[in-house]
Length: 248
Image (cartoon, rainbow, N blue to C red; front, side, top):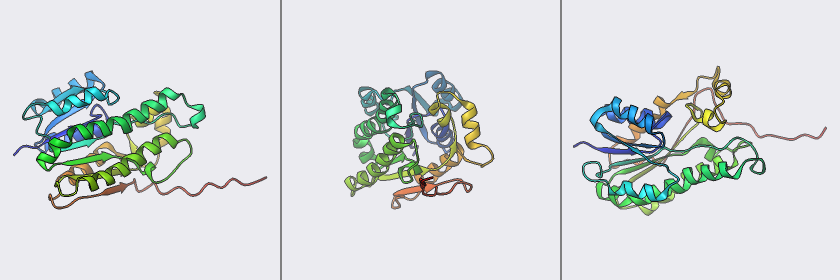
């Protein structure tokens, strides 16, 4: 029987790579995102197995409509909460409130609203929820307070949601990657590709395909196996040391 995945943030990076991976594996793919032109291009590439829907994660009312899709698209087996972004790296006091609010609304409020809306369908299908968190949820760094805070929320939300869904057969996983070279840093820096290139230079980062393959593996484990959290980094990345301010 053909399964269906709903992917948020499918217009680039991990979401786009996941859409390709699941389509190639024979799944139906509901691809959502804000950039209609990219959604159309993805749907043209993947064909009839892809349903492109222009959705902004900040518009809670629009997210609710995804629970009203008719068969076969409404028979959702996996929700991949991938959409997310980060405000510029800086102190909260120096960052425009609108940028902070956008990150919170996208990474937290939208994710919770969509998950809540789709829960009846997922319980019916004994499906799965995979949430994209980050190593930032665990390891703090300067300038990451709001982004890391949202990803810590996603991690804890995943764990507590799993408690709420005990006995339903629904699996919940938090995937927490380290450095993955996508458009993420370009968006975070307001379009500064040079900054993104410098961040990932000479360190062999993970790719969106690496994470998509990980998501595919988690999704296709036996129904009696649940991966609670999965943290992964490129081999060249490790845990930052403690910063110590020394008096001169």
